[in-house]
Image (tube, rainbow, N blue to C red):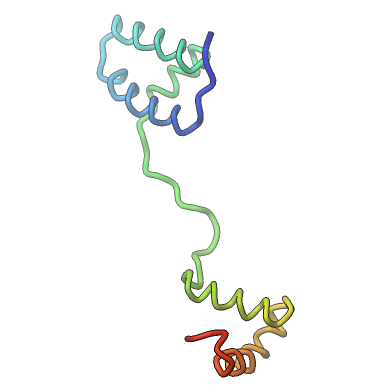
Length: 110
């Protein structure tokens, strides 16, 4: 019976076994496939597809790139919470006042 493996463990196993599987002959492929199916619990045909696939470049996250780094983001969150979590449109107008008062009272250093 196959045991449950995490996705990270499966990826590592596919990476390790896949290279050996792709460069093996027919008899060795059958043995490797039997072991792989037993460990992962995949169906044979799915295991063949997974092992034959060439590893591609890692995917980047979809969507726009980050606009602010972590320090600026932390400062913005502090200002947003000090402004009682108001909307961005109003926060933008309030930021200069908040920065002045928070640096004057020692709550923020920029």
